[in-house]
Length: 254
Figure 1: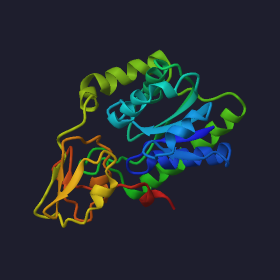
Figure 2 (figure 1 turned 120 degrees about the horizontal axis):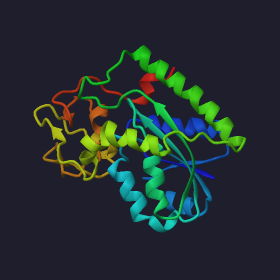
Figure 3 (figure 1 turned 30 degrees about the horizontal axis):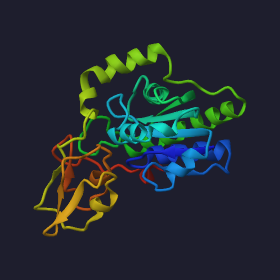
């Protein structure tokens, strides 16, 4: 067994590490960006998979990773952990349906409401104490879910047909187009950018480069919000026009 994740601002990575620690502290976790991930997937029969949900859909980078490595998933057993700022309906189901095409069986699912990572919009912004409470509540759900998996009775949140309909009509039907392709909407304010290169190092898509000591983007953004939430000058936006709050998991863990 291994843990596998994609994480933008740290929510999904934290959720996976917490789950695996509760389930079996010997389980190692890997980012899909890790060069060792492919080999570890090949050698594992069970995968605890954690990832964020965008507009009730999988991040484009995650979908591409699964499709590109389609031969890896045959006969794998998968437990899906979906993190989200509001709701997804079928966050776990999205992974289940995709992996089923390549022969994997999803044995369970867990949905976790987490601090919102969209740093350039006021939507879903909460006081820091409420975000800390979300983390505590998520931790309790993780512990209970890990215990159920130990007993062979995994939670199955987000996997049935009703969940599918909620995800479809709740968000995906209206906003699903936003995750079908990589975004070209990332905006970098070159007047305030200091060319520190932090965004370049953090971007999982190698979408950002430095030119003439200023950051510039190449229209291949997977909307993970790493650059926006870590830019020291708040020079980067995507959905909104200015950064309202920079959100990373470290702010909410005591």
